[in-house]
Length: 363
Ligand code: UD1
Ligand code: UDP
Image (tube, rainbow, N blue to C red; front, side):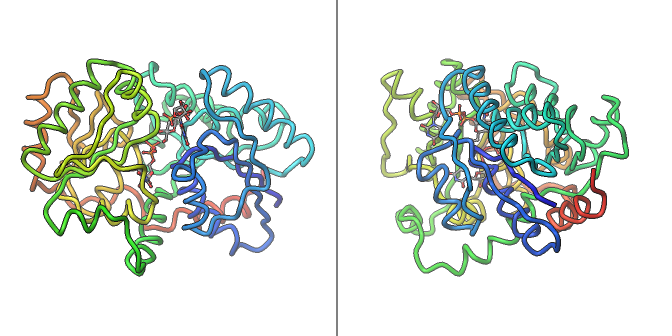
């Protein structure tokens, strides 16, 4: 089977690392990567290829930035050309970014079967660009690899043919297990570990459009993290989107003695940060789950989440950024809390199961 995997954004490199390793060890599969270029900074893209041993992309379209339509349209045309030239047997896609939707449309219109990893996730909030991307991608996919029971139920409700849906577990669990050992074995770590000097700290990440592009929500989040840093160290790796928005508003966030605003971390540093943190505050999908993998409490700065199991089991609290007091109350309630012992994301063999389905049940 001749596969082309289309990736473009940070979480997709991490997911692809787990699945590419499984595909490499599967007889009869050859995989090449197409990088749309949606994420392009060294610390948002190249670092993952260097650290995680992902095959280097055969194509990099260099198509990042711009409005949703401009970016998705350019990626659609660019991906289509590669698919016309190469005629792969299938196209493999991850998650819910503009690169995912562009790849899905390009492949489906050429009648090339699409495999979608992380199928069936829903926030039921159509104002999120990711919700549009994931719904549309699921409905043109041939293989839908769902991580959870609730994802399978969402697809059933939308009338997707059950024979196409495979509940395999979450490839991010595979990646976290696989790369934690590599992270521990390293000699060199990010300097922020030394700056913390083993003090308890909170790890924060913020990048969702619903937070960065709403001035009042972003102000509340920044003020709450600054307030929290009066009580405990806070490490905040700033996503380029957030850094740009803050700069446009004249709010250049510098580090203080206890608020460590750093550049985006590599995945290995990030895994160790999550394991060591007393609490994680985030609006990231992937980070919500990793926090749970490592048994840490999480506050999610959103109105809803796709990863509903973690809220139900008490590992994750949703906190709408409406006021600093509300966020501080959520942080204090979460610190030191633990949830119920649940295992909603499989056994760490999702990538192997995906490789098996692709080879044993070809389109
Ligand atoms: C994208 C995904 C989001 C995912 C996130 C992962 C879409 C619609 N959104 O959001 O689902 O959770 O990636 O991190 O696909 N930028 C840089 N350097 C980079 C990358 C981005 O400067 O390496 C800038 C871009 O030029 C742009 C902004 O950051 O101005 C946002 O980037 P974009 O890829 O549009 O969306 P993300 O917020 O990263
Ligand atoms: N991540 C990272 N460095 C960072 C922040 C996040 O390596 O500074 C990793 C994180 O561990 C997770 C993934 O990036 O595996 C999540 O990606 P992101 O938050 O960008 O997107 P989302 O999951 O929300 O789509």
